[in-house]
Length: 315
Ligand SMILES: NC(=O)c1ccc[n+]([C@@H]2O[C@H](COP(=O)([O-])OP(=O)(O)OC[C@H]3O[C@@H](n4cnc5c(N)ncnc54)[C@H](OP(=O)(O)O)[C@@H]3O)[C@@H](O)[C@H]2O)c1
Image (cartoon, rainbow, N blue to C red; front, top):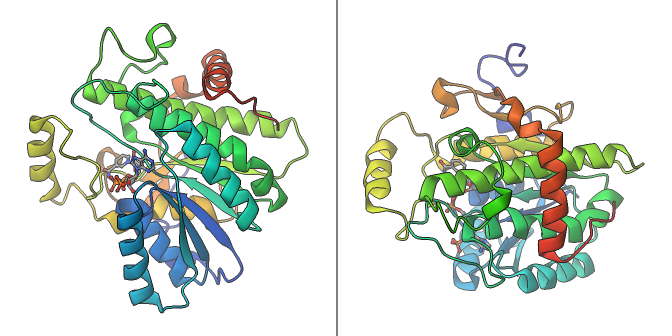
C-alpha cells in the first residue's frame, strides 16, 4: 500500500468542490455518521435524500439541518425500513419516481451488537437482514437510476469484518446454532463488503459507468450501540467513547463522503481512518484482508441474496 495520497492530514471535506446540482441518497441519515455526511454534502450545495425508518427523528434531523443551512437547504426524507423488504421496495419506487439523478447512493444504515437473536419481518437474522439483504435489494432497485447518472454506490462497512467468522456462514445464515452479538454483526458487514466487490466485478462486464466503493468510519461516537446491546458492550463503549481512541461522528463520516465525491479512488481498495488499529486518524486507504474478495463465496452470496430478496439483479 502506498503512502496516504491525500497527504499527512488525509482526506478532508476541504477537497470537495461545489456540489450544486448533485444528489446524494443516504440510508440511516437521521443520526450518526449518516447525519454528519448529510451536513458535509449540504454545506457544499448538494441535494440530500435521506432514507430513514423513523419519521419523527427524520423530521427533527431535517429541522436541524435547515436551521443550520437555511430553509431552502435541499434535504428531504423518504420512509424506508430496511427490516422489511416491502418497505425497501416502496422506498425504491418512490426514489425512482421522484428523484431525477443519484450521484451516489450511500449504504450507511445499520444495526449492531444486538444482544439476542432477532429477526426482520421477512424472517432474516436482523443484522444480515437489515445491513446486507435490505441494502442489496435497495441497490438493485436504484441501480439503473445510479447508472443513468454515472454515479456511485458507497458501502459503509466496518473493521469488524475481520473480527468475526471471516467467511459467510451459508449453512446457518440466521445463526440459529451460534448467535453471537459481535460475530453476527461482523458477518453482516463482511457480507456487505463482499456484495460491493462482487458488484464491481459484475459492472465491469457491462457498459455501465457505475463505481462501487467500500469504506469504514473507524471507531466513531454515534448511537450504534443501543439499549438492545449487551450491558458489557454498552459499558465498554461508553468508557472507550470518552477516550481519544474514539473519534467524532463527523470524522466518521469523512470516508463515506470521500467515496461519494472524490475522483481517482481505487474501487478495489478499502478506505477509512488510517491511524492506530484504523479506529481514528487521517482518512486514506486501509489494509484489506484477502478473504473479503474470495470469488467463490462472493458469487454464492450474490445468488443467495437474489433468492432471499426475491429479485434478480439486472445489470
Ligand atoms: N460508529 C462506529 O464506531 C462504527 C464502526 C464501524 C462501522 N460503523 C458503521 O457506520 C455506519 C453508520 O452507523 P453509525 O455509527 O452512524 O450508527 P447510528 O448512529 O446508530 O446510525 C445508524 C442509522 O441506521 C438507521 N437504521 C437502523 N436500522 C434501520 C432500518 N431497519 N431501516 C432503516 N434505517 C435503519 C438508524 O435509524 P434510527 O435512528 O431510526 O435507529 C440510524 O439512522 C453503519 O453502517 C455502521 O455499521 C460504525
